[in-house]
Image 1: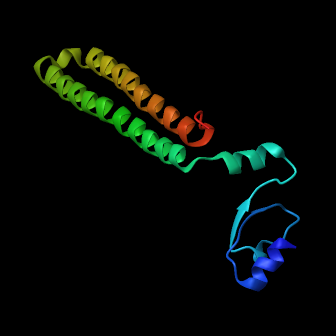
Image 2: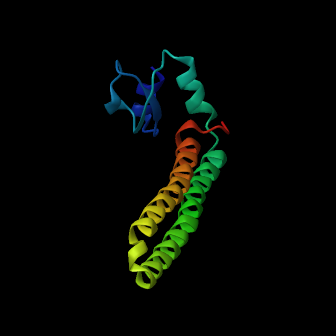
Length: 126
C-alpha cells in the first residue's frame, strides 16, 4: 500500500524484494528474504562507514600481501639464475629449492586474499 502511494506521488523507493514481489514497482530493488529476520537485520544495520573501511582494508590486505612476496620472488629467481650460472652442476638442487621457496612466498599472498575475502563477505565488524 505504501509502495503504491509512493509510485503515485513519484517518490523514489528503495525496497527489499522477495521472490513473491514485483520488482518493477521499486526504483532500486535489493534482493532479500523478508521472512528471515537475519536478512532484514543485515540490510538495516550495515553501516556505510564500516562498509567503506572494510573495502579499503581489503584492498590494503591484497596489495600489501602481494608486494612482499612479489619482491621476494623476483629476488629469489634472480639469485637462482646467478647460482645456476656459477655452478651448472647444482641446477637440480637450486631449482628444487627455488620452487619450494616460491610456493611458500605465494602462500603469503593467498593469506592476504583470504583476509580480504573475509573483510568483504564475512565482515566481522558488523
